[in-house]
Image (cartoon, rainbow, N blue to C red):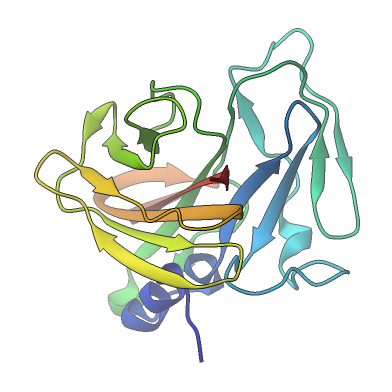
Length: 215
């Protein structure tokens, strides 16, 4: 039975369903972006993941604040009417409410997602960034700096998946051997008090995805 990287985290830390799910965004050429909540190693149910109703207002990064992209709720995803070329990024810290973990401490999750690998800059707190436009080498960035030793899970269009460890410069090479959509996943845990959903949490799971169409 296949498990996603985040699902393994949930098993290890006895956390809530929050860490067993990912948010990701898909885009074809310059069309609308499609935002999903679920488990990307499995087919998306036609009616959406059982937790899909909790995805309500993802925030697009870099969007015009005066004219935000219209969000339209579909059966199993949210459609964002983004325009023009370029990569699409978003973040959402309101999908799952904080939960009480083992030892009585509270934990929370923040999701980040990106579609496309044309831009070599980072704009999210946790982001997988291509070394060059359309490259198969990537660097994991945390707060704008490389994250050494990060574990990156790759899921291809056939839902084959494997995890890779970034080097000392946060860099990882991804095998892009066939056509179709690829999804890269990284999770980074941060200890320390912060407020999420109106609750002070002691640990935050940062979960970030990147999708692109290869080769």
